[in-house]
Image 1 (cartoon, rainbow, N blue to C red):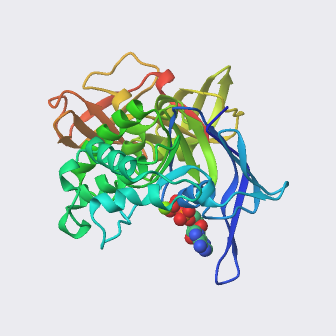
Image 2: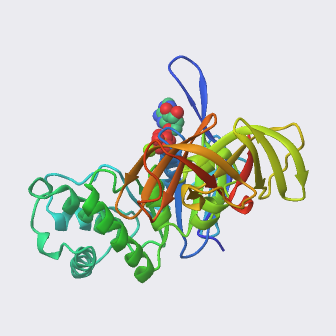
Length: 368
Ligand code: ADP
Ligand code: MG
């Protein structure tokens, strides 16, 4: 049985103006045992609301939620299990530590506050110390949150979320308030902790790099709906929609009209000539308006005209050396094209150059 099963979930909010927002709009997905699932999407797309409904802090309007095979919410059956009975830990964006309690007390809190279970005192102490050690702040036991850095506070919050040893931990952008270096470090640690402890994770973020690094599977949310659910590789290489393609990583886009379709191969007439691309799952017909999209690292740049199906002559606006690669920005007909190369000496600013890309690296996606 999956750890989480969400079916046809809908949550509406009424704005002060009276307008109704579908914050969650018919969402269905599962989290398998031991999975690390990331809910990814821009601010306002419904990530927090979805987590809160699973935790029981928000009542959905329709649909059902099961955890470890047990129904926690069902609009049809009239079931709603209160949050403290759901055996879920949750960690928030703000550390939400009690300022008047030491790190020890903060971490012990869930063990003492959960209803129906009395954990003996020495076991509390053992588990709290274990959790603090695990997140690397054993020495902060007696300190108060006000005496700690942001990164340390977030480690305490993490220990508090893990101390119950729940099978499911929900994370709502827990790393967005710590600075970049610490954030990166904590991501690595989080991945190894999850592997070691074996809990299933549902992790919310608006940061696509974070999603790619952490996730076994990513659910991309678009205005309360799941636009795509798949591995980071699938999402990156086989985006289901133009929204997904644009949200994850950098991508070039030429808009045009389909002039021929042959199996999965599509010919698109664009403002800078013909583009041959591939369909992955989607269907298009001759005459449809589409986007032909490809990743900057898939393009090639040359001074001589290449032997390639897709080749366009452009003018280099600015090569930008960024360390791991050089980014070339070119004006090609009516569009600007980005191209990444390990070489920084291909062409100078102002020069004419050819861009080519293999048809199998071009995704043709319907305009949404
Ligand atoms: P995210 O976490 O992805 O930024 P939220 O889940 O917080 O998104 O919000 C999703 C949508 O629901 C937004 O349009 C937001 O304004 C609306 N919303 C969230 N909570 C409430 C609330 N308590 N009352 C009214 N609207 C809300
Ligand atoms: Mg949020």
